[in-house]
Length: 587
Image (cartoon, rainbow, N blue to C red):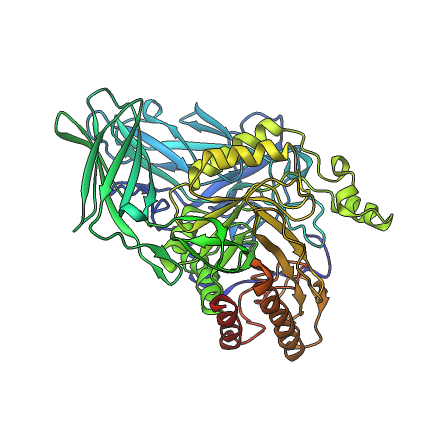
């Protein structure tokens, strides 16, 4: 970010940050155990050439879990493809019960992580957006101080991996790159066998939840037991590591944005009538799909009823933490104010958030469209082709956004689907955004739909549509929006629209920013937004099923947020927005 026009910017939550113990909250709300140990805080730090051996001494410090390059990390450096980041800290492992193993968890590390404990290699992982864990039992002594070392290599958008909006040359819609640990690091003693995941699916007509429990190390004769406090209970045998437990309710209360009810789940793994593992979880009872309304228009449905999805495109970036919000309160804030503005949907744009973000979405009640982060995207090449008069469908995307590692993309896509499967707020998967690394479109969309039948698959969001996927998704940034002709049996949606810009001095990192249409002041912005809202209102009776406005906050050079980048200024009064949006959703 070496630019005279770029200035440091802090959010108000940065003042609440404890650098010795940041992010103290339990990081995995959907699979909770009582015993765990947080390893966030100050770590030793160094940067070497990529091929250099592990350094004996790391002379600097970094605050984990904030990525390298963020102000809150304390390291102002852009990591390049020929560098490697090293992080180290000492810890005393928690005491373990007989037979327990000790797992080291990482919420997310961007991109390739290698892990040593007491100089013993214990794990390696590739993937910048999904959690992973390594077993360090054999590398640590009981109650003895241990040393953890993590090395990270991240080529950013010079590599073939999913990167989202990161770029080593940020401009316009591309942002400052990050590298390293950017979510919580923690220890957890676990038994063997061990519950690995809890995912619920809903049958509202029968008032039933089916809870799928997976466990590592389970044997024939083991059983999964699931109880709802004050409600039903069920049990089922573990078969090949999986059990499906049926819970029959007298009345199953559905989850929705207006009533985000969550059912607590107590989940146990039993062997010979003895509990060998226990976790606490939760479920939201909801069904999603597409169907015609009374007028014959295809609509998105929730719990058997059509619902207009009115949402914000949410980048999830922070001026002081980049990928990482300063605190859990800050993380929840963007969802809370989105709801206060009267939206019922968030499209999480080419980024995967920490598990706590989705828990906040579940408990607060917001519909989530979850994007798969895209691979690299050469904006300058796209602008060159646009300058030559080439329209999006005819562009050479092999030059703009090549899909150089389809197997790696598919592996991280599947890891994201598995990781986020428990969260009821997620109702739509968006495997591809526009032409950004779009490849093997039909097979990829079919793969996601087959893998998760409880959600809708967008196909794809904007630009180059192949006629597959559950939605026909258009990106429309003109003020005079019109509704394209209906496409077969797919609802017509605006996956992006709006993008009205307003620069608010002293509340952005970039003094000069842009929007798809720039307003002179707050009053003009509000008027332009009201005009857009009237346009959307007129399109809903014609069949428009969803509209996602760009965007929640300003981000770096993009000044088209409803909030400034530091979240200090709401550009249009919240109450006025809520009134306008209520009319759209109730229509």
